[in-house]
Image (cartoon, rainbow, N blue to C red; front, side, top):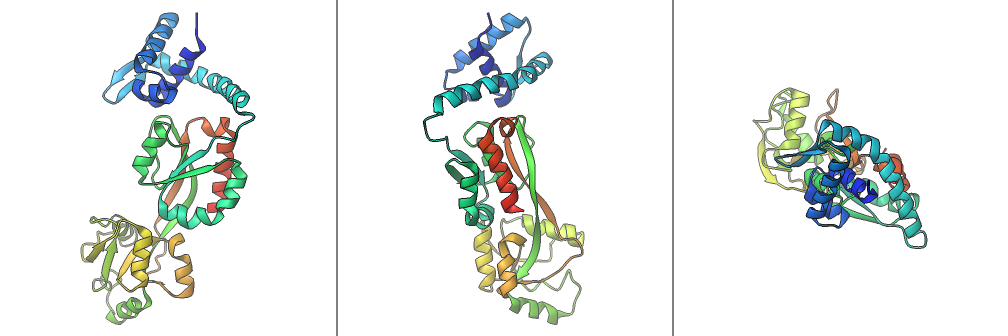
Length: 297
């Protein structure tokens, strides 16, 4: 006979792509997970998974079965969760993302976000790849990511397009204007404050706007925090490329100035990543996605 716990295990392994991670998510041992899968394979009469270098992947029939079963397993889990937690505080929603974006665009509206979601919000800052891995394994419920995730079991929804600008303190603008050289060469005398040694953000700006690498620039410092780079620029340390949201007020009050205004500014789409199916079946997560989209846009 078929056992619901075995079906839940099967769907969890399918989404996690690993017997070990499925065991951690379900709170059972890996041998138990293996036994559940073997039991289902005996019932259905075909293999559900094959092993690969990173864990397991579903067979063709296993994938088809998972797509048919997942929504039903989720619905039964939701019913069980509602009955178990009706009289307790709602479970916290765990959100990961870049500290600069969350601190600048989300934290000032935290009260609105919390009220819309109706549950405690726990934030974790970090790099996109690390946070997306935590999302995949169940440690996080949602990740705001500046890169589009390409991971099985993760769905990404576009939140907004961030624009990048080349900025410095006003004194550097006057110096570059006095150089009277081409746009590409006029900034060679201005020190560059970069996020990483290979100038990832600056390099992208140069390639998009000028069609070449920024080989002629002079790197002055590497600071792996965009907010700290902003502070250094305001103090006159040099120039850098930063997301517009981070320097909007500085450009308005004159603390920073645009060194260049391209016809088409470099853009990067920021996504909200969740485990596939979670937004449609978890109302609080759906409220989070809707409110984040409203706040950030």
